[in-house]
Length: 85
Image (cartoon, rainbow, N blue to C red; front, side):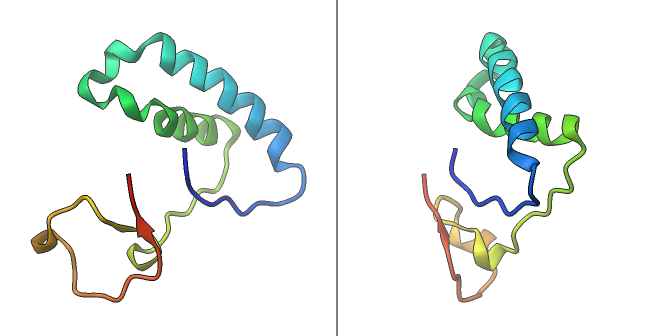
C-alpha cells in the first residue's frame, strides 16, 4: 500500500496492530472482494482506521491525481502528485 500518513505521537503502535489484524481478515476473505481483491491492503487500512477511531482526511485531488482514469472524467487542474498503479 502506498500513501502518506501524518499522525500524532502514539498513533503507530495502535494502528500497526489493527492494520495487521484487518489485513489477515481481508486476506482470509478475498473472495468477498471479487475482482477488487488486489485492493485488500486498502480495505484493511480503511477498516483499521475505522476500528481505532482515526480522523482520516482524504487528500485533495491535486495531491492524489489518478493516472488510470479517463481524461474526460478528470478536472483540468495542475496535479502536484500522481497516483500511479
